[in-house]
Length: 339
Image (cartoon, rainbow, N blue to C red; front, top):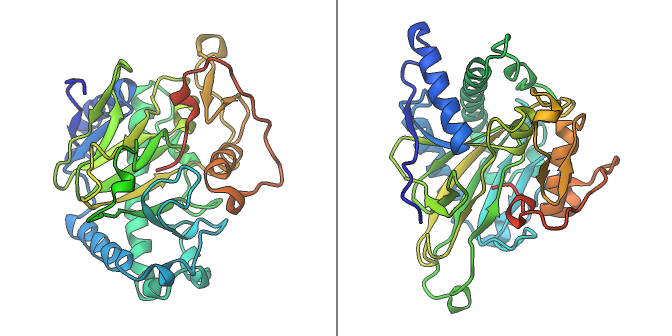
């Protein structure tokens, strides 16, 4: 592990005109260097976070045959058990995708446990969306764009497929000798969208250091949100903002320890065309998930390709995008996934 200092930024004055530019610069600089940061004094009430974690824990403690009756759908609603994605990660996940109202409209895709909690989940998603929009405005200001809502306006909460909240549980095992020596509980990957908000109840996440020389343990600080950027925003920014690899290993989180987290994935609307904000000749070629991202790809096309490569048939596309393998490309940049 390297000893580089991990960025922790207080955003309590984010809405104050006298502090906005300073905070925007600090947040953006962290994302230039790390692609990751911890937000202290954010606007999402700790009581709301704790309520979501409590519900999540109660759900994951249900028998597996109860949860597995509701597999993940193309609407990004449903359950995936341990070792069920193509990376064979040892984690369970419950997905709440869609625009506001989608969970009610598709309640048949939700386990019965969640039916009485839909309003709470929707409200939590809305608070997360508001924070993502504020961060997107920070990036636009600090990058010198004439319109501070340049990125934010493409992230309409009620457009396209909406954004996704995912509850995650890495189960603890009293005795699983078959897991000893395995490399990861979550493979090294980058996210596909714009901004991810990660809420954690335990440490365990590791991120690639800014110089690419090794893995750094992301601090776990109570009531802080861990923020990282995805490939769509990294490409859109012309590489000025980083989508950084991260992982959860069995060394970083022993197999007898449980880890609970929640991730909110803020993504631009699917029809958003990704054109880097810097001249193409000044931008290095951008690779992810084994293909080169080219100007003009839409957010929907990029997301479908990545999700289909990880989760298979649930994310089939009627308009396949050609995949370009690049010999000699750093393997980590090709192994893109979604937390």
